[in-house]
Length: 134
Image (cartoon, rainbow, N blue to C red; front, side, top):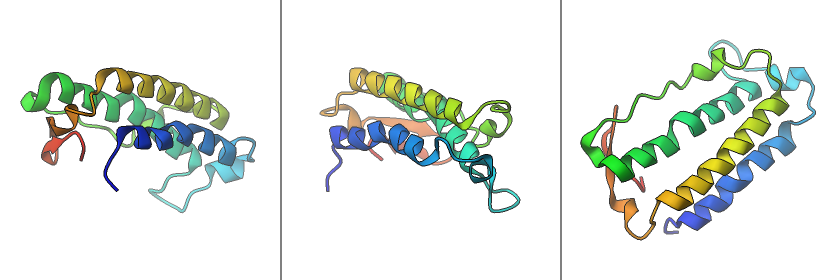
């Protein structure tokens, strides 16, 4: 299967609703249980997805489209959500994720030309030069 932006968006659009169906209304033990030290629970995972929406995939796409490989992507702190969501409920996180994802997909459609932009490159802090479609 060749990558098609609209097909990828089909899945990206459904992710918030799917997570909401799985997690909304579950008791706290289901939301907060993990597999031990240095593992995440469902609450942490949704927080991580929010951080990715805010600080990872779309900002990096914007950099590729506007600056190419002239600047290195800012590092992404994969653990920042562990200290940011105290006092929030899973429902609040799910709503935030849905809102940000919806806005990001709207922006993606506006800034990306799938006919030409997928060959553009950016500079990843660990992997070096990467193509947008990778």
